[in-house]
Image 1 (cartoon, rainbow, N blue to C red):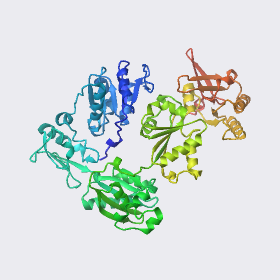
Image 2: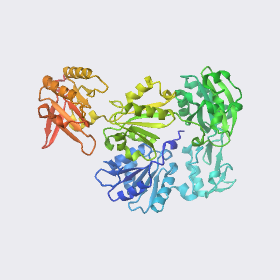
Image 3: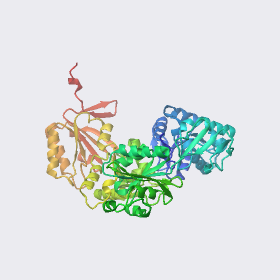
Length: 615
């Protein structure tokens, strides 16, 4: 069973106003809920500067719900239900959905009561001074959700919990394990003769049934030592055998732990994924502090990594000195070691001292500027970050995500400085978002990240161990083409006219070759305050090769308030139309202008279907 609750971030709900009337209430909630995102219809007015505009209410709700983001919707329950109906899933993995009446009179935890809707509703009740209309039977009747245990515990077989929950609601009594202390304030009474039993057990032989709920305490800390590029299967085989020998349920594994020089070892992360737990790392200095508790010391290991053992020491370190060694270091073929320490109490990952997670660097393309052009992945990754790094102008587009994150602003031209800073932060174990305009891999920071990691010896020693992901965005040439029509409908190329990094003669050669090959050309960085020569060169050469009736698209400030896109022929073009905020697309010999209606002007490049042979 996969525990999905951990990937729902309750502190960052989406607040959605269905109408203009609902906006003041939505703004009130957003003002006192700093990490929340406020969504309003693009047709409505709002004084909230960070408001995100949406076009279709149902589409927005379905997208947000599918990404497991909590929803606070200022609307009638009927429209919310109808909007979400196509994407509703089984209740055990539903994110919270809370409906607030338009006037703020009532708060209804509609969905996801088992994953935080109660907590969010209670906060809303404080903000608005409004009552909560409970519709969840367990919480309403006995005051607690039996299928939502506290951190460090997991309910075994939630799908089998329906009848036991019904018994609890009807009888209001159960035979309660003395170690279940979180039920003391509930209305559920202990009765040793009750038909319902609530048990905490590590033993696989104790299972959930129609009259029993079994909770597993996450107390097993698995320490792993691994050689580079170790195979996953031998570790699973040994851990499964260990669990079977002791009759431990897999849900009792709190985490996989190792030394920080192994933070990028894929098999460790795969192990954590296999056992549905987390993975954490400790420095050699921290592991050295556990030397006296090791069953054996290894001078060889000390010479290699700076401590006398990894598997046992990491498992002990994860318990914060409150654990018992139940599996001494066990060699796994020639690829590593495994040990297990059982903590005296359930493990809360957030409370483990001196532990670091693998640092993550996400190079994020946010598109040309508009909220509407950002992918769901882009938004989700930004919401997960601890730090945002970028050109201050680009970071200004993300004001809705500034709260709760550390911002690292850089000036134009400080590309290397911001990349090195982002890598250094990730090497410290932080989750870093390096923000790029357009697409992260097209004239942006992605290539520079890899170049720095490849060539810069001054980066932190563990920089090579960070996790890297590239989040694509809509590029400027895609945005310009979409606004203009379909000028990139056939073969095309992109050329930057900035000679800061590329010699002028090379750029001119690429322009000449593109003209000779009859490519559509997307021109990035066409001019600057001091640089016009190359742009004049490409215009003059295009007139020579393709003539003055060649199609040209000038797109400025794409996705922003003063956006302007012009589709004309070269003989109508004037250089003053272009500045540093402009991208230019020059059509090939077949590109066409098309006028529709009275004012709609489009540009497109035919694929050649008129010449397609039938059959």
